[in-house]
Amino acid sequence: MYPSRFRYEAPRSLDEAISVLHDGGDYAKVLAGGQSLVPLMKLRFASPQLVVDINNVPGLSYHRAGPDGTLRIGALCRHAELERSGLLKTTQPTMAAAAPLIADPIVRNRGTLVGSLCHADPQGDWASVVLALGGSVVARGPRGTRTIPLAGFVTGPFQNVLEPDEIAVEAVIPAAQGARSGGYLKLERRVGDFATVGVAVALETSGGKVIRAGIALTGVGGFTIGATEAAQALTGQPLTAETIEQAAELAAQAARPRTDHRGSAEYKRQQASPGLKISGKAFGMGRRFPIAAKIEG
Ligand SMILES: Cc1cc2nc3c(=O)[nH]c(=O)nc-3n(C[C@H](O)[C@H](O)[C@H](O)COP(=O)(O)OP(=O)(O)OC[C@H]3O[C@@H](n4cnc5c(N)ncnc54)[C@H](O)[C@@H]3O)c2cc1C
Image 1 (cartoon, rainbow, N blue to C red):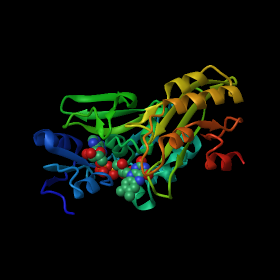
Image 2 (tube, rainbow, N blue to C red):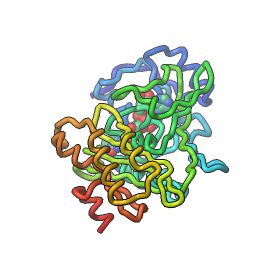
Image 3 (tube, rainbow, N blue to C red):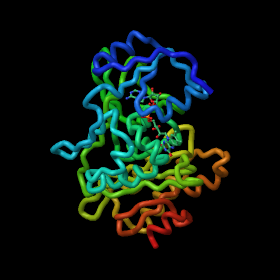
Image 4 (cartoon, rainbow, N blue to C red):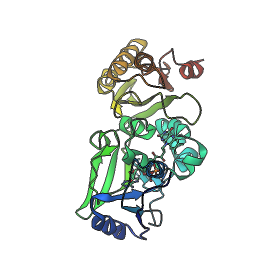
């Protein structure tokens, strides 16, 4: 199917892009990688009157860590760059684990992490990862710049708090206070599919105890689920079989899965139970989950 008729603008600066969006009113859409927006337009699930392509805006393709370790990912940083990133491999285990699991290589070459957060698909993998890491989105619009924690950014399926004339310019992952560990595991029917269930675990440890924990679930509710009680159960505790088991149980309880073509609600809830390798170095889903067995094996 072809999209509905729309006006296309490709501004060459952020200010121009914001101004064009502002004039476009409620019926304008930002185009980043186009890997979600274009299919939606072709299916006519989205029919914007104006598409503002930000790919000509310079200086948005970065991902870099500041002197204190804060990681910033620009709005045009592609999934593939994150997949190949040495910085992520050495400093961001949860992100490094997720990057190769997003879609397929063709989608990863164009799609962006920030676009994925904005798209707010309950099946989106990056939202769980960024939520588990306590990250936020920086938005810029005619009224200035604001930073929105991811926990308050997504308001429902395919909905976020951005105003129609705001652009998400970057995602920010705060610096770790302790030794960072974690991972992302995704149960998918076949390589390249959206998650049946995904679990992101991001821990910081110091002195043999967890000083910060984030756990988030993909594909088991109408939006990305932060398993806050599970994370709290680990915080201040050493990683033992008991604390891990308790967190796993609480994470499964936080899931709100529905039966669909990817599996029954009960099956998905079982898979949403994060199990961890006791060494604290590798994290994944429960023992029933085959990938966890592979990691632990
Ligand atoms: C075949 C296929 C398989 C996929 N599989 C997966 C998968 O397994 N896991 C997964 O997580 N994703 C998957 N995706 C989605 C993919 O990751 C997209 O790249 C991502 O969801 C959106 O990023 P994008 O840059 O392409 O955004 P776009 O498609 O350009 O935009 C998506 C939405 O976000 C808005 N938007 C984008 N950037 C901004 C911005 N900077 N400021 C404000 N609004 C913005 C757009 O207006 C639009 O509403 C898949 C896509 C396809 C086509």
